[in-house]
Image (tube, rainbow, N blue to C red):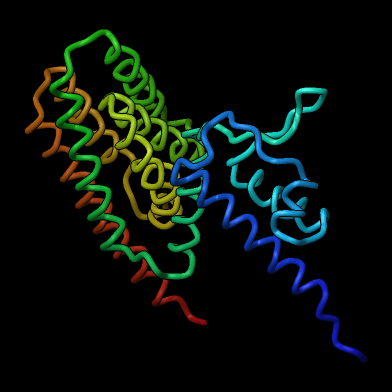
Length: 249
């Protein structure tokens, strides 16, 4: 059976074109909302076929770097970065790293403690109306977590929303982006591991202390409550993993 080389070369060329255009976008040579050359023009510049250019543009669109518009004034335009898309990509990559073992228990706990402690301090220092909504969201989730009828899945989801609101309370866009990987990726993974060995009352107690400290603008008490929560979670992780290792195979 003959070896087919054409498709491999085409895909490689498309990737090189996508990488070249991506570099131009990232370093500012192509500005947000700037229209890209047409497929035909790009094909001539890169000396490739239009289908190869089309494949390169699909790659950029999948990365949310360009958007298309139809009509006489249409074409492909450099897209404004969407924070939620970037954060989702970061969370997905983090989840994969956890799944393959590149990120371990201690790394997860340390990253969460350090980053979320910064959120606690920033939230405690804030004194503006924008803090009202995230604190209210934390109160609502705490009340929900005290419901004994709540399923394990619902409790875990509420846990994530509680800490999502804490991050929002910090009021820092870049920190919020970085924390997305911790709250949206690491915390669900953590919950899946420990939900059988943790005590809900303990989690609720830590959350209540944390919320009360933030309401009082007490950064030290808030970070202490978070530290105790992370230490408890770390211990439950180890307990869960030990029990898993003891199961007969």
